[in-house]
Each structure stands twice: as C-alpha cells, then as structure tokens.
Length: 591
Image (cartoon, rainbow, N blue to C red; front, side, top):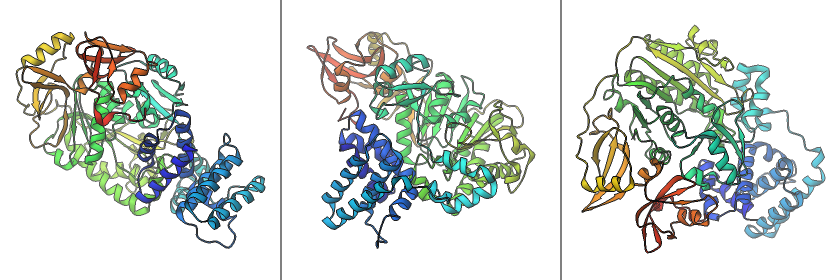
C-alpha cells in the first residue's frame, strides 16, 4: 500500500538524516503523489510511530526470542505494524501484518521476513495481554532524565502532562484576515473536502481533519490561512498590538507568529521578521509572501548585529526563543532525540544573549514578549528572572487571561515575585502544545528612534501603465529598487545597506524595456484586478495551474488567476490560452 511504503521511507529518512519529520513528510507525500486518503494515513502512521517509539520497541522486544539486535530498517517495519495493531483502530490487524511481512521479504532475506511474521503473529495472539509499562519514560516515549526532572517539579501531575505531551497532533489553522474572515475560510475548507471545527478557545482558528496534505489545498496556496498551534498564538495575543506600530519578530521562522503579527498590523506600520538560519529565513520569506503581507522587512541576521543598528527603534518585540522543545515532543521526534540537560543549558545561554539584544532595540514604554515551547525552568522562569536582574528597567506585565496557569517564581535560580505574572500553557489543561510566555514592559515613555530611509525612486511608466490596466491602487509607501525588482516599502522602512535582506516590503515586479512583469507577491496581495480569470475551487483548471500547465481562458495579456474570487497567481493570455506564470519552485507536480 503506497501510504505504508511512504511512511516507512519517511521513518528511514528521519532516522538517517536526523531531519524534522514534518518537512520530510511533506516532501515524500508530494514525491509519491499520494491521494488525500493515503496522505492522511501516511501522516497518522509516521506521527504515531515517532511519538510512541519507546513504547513500540517495548512491545516488540517482548516478543523477540533470542534476538537482542534488529536491523534499523526491519525495526521500522515492525514499529509501523505494531502501531497499527495497538493504537490505530481503522486498519485491520491482518492488513498491517501482511504488509509488514511483504516489505520485509522485499528488503531482507527469508529469515528476517520469517522473524517479522513470527513476532507480529505472536503479538496478535496475545494482544489482549499487552499493557503499557509503569515507567513513564517508556510509556510516553520521553527521555528518562527529563521525566525524573519533571517529576521533582510537577509531582502527581506528571502522568497527565506526559500523556498530553505525547497525544496525537491536531492540525490547527488560523484565518488570515488580510484576505478573508473565519466564516468564509470555514466554508472554503469544507467545500474542499475538509472536516472543520472551530477551536474551543482561540477565535479565528479551526481544527482540520480529513484534508490530507494542507499545502495541497487552494485555500493554503491563496494565503487564506496559516498552520499554527493555538497555544503558540497566545504570546502574540497579549502584546497589545495596534496598526501603525513598529514590530520586530526576532526569531521568526517559519513565520506563524510573524504572519499573525502582520495580520494584526492590518498593513500599517512596519513588521521586521528576522531569522538567523539562512534556509529557514527563505521559508519565512515565502510565508510572508503567501499571506499577502505588504509591510514586512524580512532579514537573515544575528540578533547582536541588529542591536546597535536598531537601538530604541521598535514599539513591540517578540522573542519566540529557540529552545529545547519539551512542549512539542508530540509534534517532532527530533526534539526528543536532541534533548539533553546540556541542550537545556545551551539554549538558556543563547536565550539570555537574544533577550539582551532585544532589550536594547525596544523604545522606552514598549513591550517585549518572550516565549518558548519548553517546560524547562532554566529557559522559562529562570531566563526571565535573570533578565530582570540584568535589566532593572523592565517589569513583567500581568496578562489579562485568567484561565492561564501562572509562572512559578520558586523554580527560578533568581526568584522574583513578578515571575508569578508570567504564564504557562500546560498541554493537559489546554488543547495545544506546552508553552511559556512573559510580557515585559520597559520603563519610561519615548517615541521610537528615527533612522535614515532608503532612496526613493520615481514610478516607471511601465508600472504605471500596468496598474492603470489592472485598476490597482497601491497603498501609501515608498517605491525602492532592490535587486532587479521594484518594491513598495512602508514609510518607516530603514536604510537597507549593511543588512542581509530577503524581502523589503511588497515586491511589485520588474520594468523591462517598455513592459512590466508583475511579481507573484503582488498577485497574492491583490484582492482582485480588472483583468482576471476566476475559477471555482472544483474546476480542474485549478490543479492544472498549480502544476504549471497552460490553461484555457479568454483574457489577453497579464491576467490575475483567482479561485472563487481570491487571487492565486499570474498568467498571460493570448489566443484563448493562458500561459502559466505560477512560480516553478511552488508548483505541485503531483497535484
């Protein structure tokens, strides 16, 4: 079955590359061209096996006779089968066993295939006797040392926390109100075959089931939504953001919180989204583009290199710090395998440096929100307690969310009574990942610092003619030239020289000897245009377009392709055909 074969390949790649499973899973589902039902099964198998690896090995080892070692690939096959037998009701046991034996025969000798068959048949005969061990580290597939550390701090709540931290991941999406509203998004997703349920406590968010690979939905490609855990949104919700502010997301990739910030700014003010890792910065930039955010400067910089350049420049700063990831173990097996006490200490030291840089870039009277997705006190209350010692001009602000669990001052090496105003999201109390956050205010009250602006250019005649033809009015801003393209940047955009810039505002396109070629970013920002080819979500031309094919259409010249009235990309019409200009790097070859 393609789903099981693809799942086994994903497990092998995660094991051999040390890669994060979500990226590998998307890559392999696309490469295999799995249908929606098979993609959903493949996802369930991979996530289930990775979440429960220690427990599955415990069951497998209990039925091995005289064998202490299995080849890693054979263990992958057994883990997949045992997960289906013990934890996945929708797959018949016989189908799981037969497929595992078939895969073992194809890759190994008859002896190994026979061992696979014997272990699984013996397990089926004794299925009613299988019971999880009392050892929480095995039962919930968490590092033993972490379990011991958490037991000392949370006591009797440990089992409930670990069970929730290892529960199946639910896909949650947030509506992008720059392009749509929650009700419209819900209707669009349901029309595209998804089961959609409003999130119980986070407005504008939905739990999605039965949609297969989310990135294959037209609603995703149009930028109507962003996949993000609801708990992760709360750190932005508390920041008291207003349109027109200058906002910095200092550790921004892959962009869930940046797009949430951009949504709240409503296209006004300036959003600087920075990511130190070059590869992840490119992902961040693509997400900013997809969501139609026009007022974002995307950077690839080390925080300390930004510190002096932007001293006192921002009204709001978000530090969603790189951390040990204990609160997202259910989502990423790599976070489990990478965890160690040394990792916690390394993360805490790095977080301290990032916070110090952020403090210098915030104006007096501004707010800084610090967040992590870990339970580790050293990275949570400990990080904020030490920060307050170093920066007495900062104070913790109590969030107006009484249903959140308060921070624990006694867990910090440098206790401070203000730490009770920090907050924790425990996964056994709220549906979502485990998170910590603290909202800090800088003493005083002063306007943000002013910086030199980039040189403004005159609007080329080619661009003016294109905008007139499309009946498009640009928002206020400054036209600048960056690389070969023309960008519209917000009024507060600083001089770009000396910065590693990926995106300085809204890319409009390129003027080329009497003609203008519009950028994909402009298409995704536009709500509509005078020259469009509007398709319904069920029109087969939508998938043809996403695959890069020429599609039939009546328009001539540059044409905005829309799906149910929402922009998807550009085409160029001539003679009843629309030549495809959807970016090659975004095309879905197995749509």
